[in-house]
Image: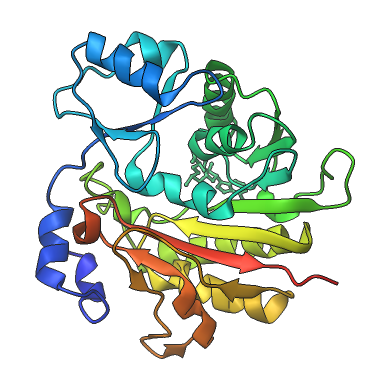
Length: 303
Ligand SMILES: C[S@@+](CC[C@H](N)C(=O)[O-])C[C@H]1O[C@@H](n2cnc3c(N)ncnc32)[C@H](O)[C@@H]1O
């Protein structure tokens, strides 16, 4: 399957990987604990004859049956939000605490912004930035539907982010869920690779580097930054981390991920990356029957 063939040297069990990429993706919903509880959602979905499967590693996340209706009253009331399994990883790894100041650098349409607000019990502050006005409109709608009152939306290029959080010089944490070539979404969008080109991968890599660098710069000493993509391309993953390690003071740290995964790679074609990028996690679709994903945790040294 072009262009995924380029990953044959780095993917464990390449045939299983391609098989999984050709299967449709199961849909999932996250319970919005700002407005309700897991138990109330389970009752409401059972009453609506929607038989959901709980995801064992993440509380309040459910896989939907294949033929389930897209819209139902728990959705309209903001009790649930459609969010696939791997998409909940970055906010979970960032682990924001109530009262924190958090920057969500590429926020629209707000799945992770609203997850962050829920993890913080809708306290503190989430500054949610995006450079696309149309997508910001979806971000605002989701934020309102899900009742996340502590979210402030900014329309700007994340590379130039200059807003200071309320009452602070910098952020406690930043989430950097960058625009990417989306190779890992092929199960959801089978056309996603039709416009794939190496020049796009290389171009978007420059944007990703700029946004991640800015996130490290605006995070307070001792703070945490999480970087994620839904793509397999090392140019958009390990190469971005390697660049930022050289440019600004930060380190990549290991974290627990209770899902099957592979380590970040330290060599790709003619490039060698800093050994610490191996602490990033690659999640391939055949590992857990999900979409593809990449996620790294960075720490800004305390002064
Ligand atoms: C992967 S999507 C984010 C998904 C979002 N985090 C969520 O969970 O709903 C990447 C987003 O980055 C935005 N984006 C692209 N270039 C940007 C830039 N230079 N600065 C900020 N946002 C950007 C896109 O408009 C898109 O909404």
